[in-house]
Structures are given as C-alpha cells and as structure tokens.
Length: 168
Image (tube, rainbow, N blue to C red; front, side, top):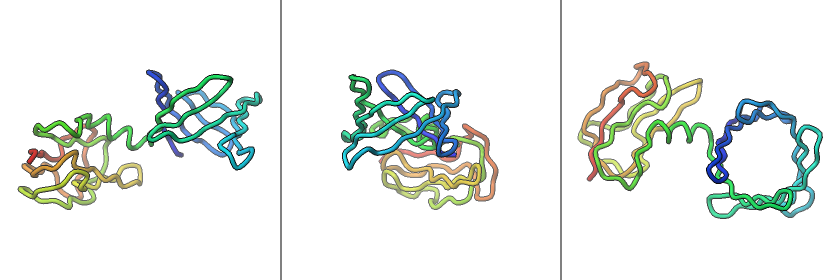
C-alpha cells in the first residue's frame, strides 16, 4: 500500500492508495478513476461517480492544481519521509547537538558509521528495518558521531535514541 501526505495551504491530507480504483483520504475510502486526456497535464478525474477535469503541473517542489475554476498549490510527501521528518523535526540548518531517534519500531540492520567519525549532510547513519522495508536514517548536517546507543540486530522502539551527533 502506497501512502502520501499532501498539504494544501494549512490543510493536511493523509492518502493511501489501496488499489487501482480506491484511495483512503484521512480515513475515508473513496472510489476514483484518473486518466490523462491528452499529452498535456489535463486529467479526467472521477470521484465516487462524479467527473472532473483537472489540470496538474509541477511547480518546483509543489504541484499546481486547477480544479473547478480554482487553483491550489499542493506539497506531496511520501508517507515514510513524512514519518521520518516528524520523528526528527530538527531543521537541517540548525547547528546544535542532535539525537537521532527511531521514527518507528524496528530492527537495526546496519550502522555504517563509527563513534568519532565525521559525516556529511545526508550520509546514512543507520539502516532500520520496519514492516519489511529498510529505511535509511540520514545526517541532518555535517557532524561528528559522538555516541551510538544501539547495535546491529537490536530491536528498537519508536522514539528510542539511536545515536548523537555534534555539528562541525
């Protein structure tokens, strides 16, 4: 099952694609059909039997959506990335010590860094397996690994401290 979080203005929609005809939006299951009409970004959208024409085009990191005479800017984020970001909300420009916490319960598969090692922004710090998927937990900024609290093969709980970084 594929999941996304879509933000339009200050509204947040949690979307799960259940199959090729059904989605769950904030807990409500909806029947949908989406098809391209031409080579343009014009789409035919049928929601619970009602038909709409939608124009959707990427605008940088957002999508510009034209629907029923209105324009919306939508930010789309993969559910896993959303979960990881919410579990570790540190701003990447922040330069204070940082404790990486498990965004979900799981199994530590690998720790490709060592204590006192210097890492760059986005380097993989820990590989965590959860729900049969491996998630790479990455450094928010250039740092030094100060302490590692877990070992490969260890099961961890959500929000459990995994390692500590000091910015360089």
